[in-house]
Amino acid sequence: MALKDEVKYQGAQALDALDQRGGLVDFHKWFLFRNVPRGLSWLHTLGFCLLIVFVNQALTGAILAMHYQPGPDTAYESIQRITMEFDFGWLVRGMHKWGASLMIVLMFLHMSASFMMGAYKYPRELTWISGVLILAAMFAMGLTGYLLVWDQRAFWASVVAINLNGTAPFLGPYISEFLRGGSEYTADIIPRFYSLHMLLIPGALAGLIGLHMYLVTRLGVTPAPWKHDDPANDPEAWS
Ligand code: HEM
Image (cartoon, rainbow, N blue to C red):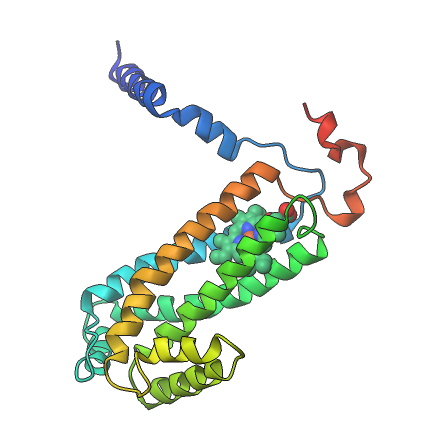
């Protein structure tokens, strides 16, 4: 057997073995090879764009975390070093910073597109609700990340945001107290926000995005409103 055929054969064997144990092929088919309605547009690609920017945030964030030092005397200096001294540090930091803004813009576009398509209605209410939770978690990522730069702007912007939170009814004061780690602003807020920004919120986000994707895959995407009456978009006609 030629080397190329041998490699192909061994590859197929390995995939087959994995499939028998983990159901890879079924999952792959279920996840990627689905019927989609007729008349999809570029507006339906916004969710995937968000996934790509999310991966960018995770990767650049992991690299930044290798050099960032979350302490009152080290945070600002470590960020200066990342930007000025490390190879391509400016690029990684820039990708993370601008990626965060891009994510918010894309999220509003994706949310508006889903709203205009009526994708929040039955049977996709849970997809919408998981999206709203993702939105809240993303805002929390923005808040906790902004402080980490630890310059005057970052500090005072965070003070204003946390105080504003405190004015919300019922839960507001508790959330503020939790974010501050007490009733006073101290330097302990840096490791606190770092842990929230690095571990807690991304963990929750990964779970929520997983749920969002599961629901999108299970329910399929909504056809554009002007294609609702297209007989080809009747799910009964697909099977
Ligand atoms: C990190 C944030 C998000 C990611 C990665 C994401 C990802 C996706 C993807 C890949 C799709 C399928 C393709 C598409 O229609 O674009 C989708 C659909 C959907 N998303 Fe999101 N999404 C996010 C945030 C949100 C938010 C904030 C909302 C609303 C509050 C939302 C509501 C929906 C709805 C209702 C659908 C179904 C659309 C349809 O049936 O046509 N998503 N999302």
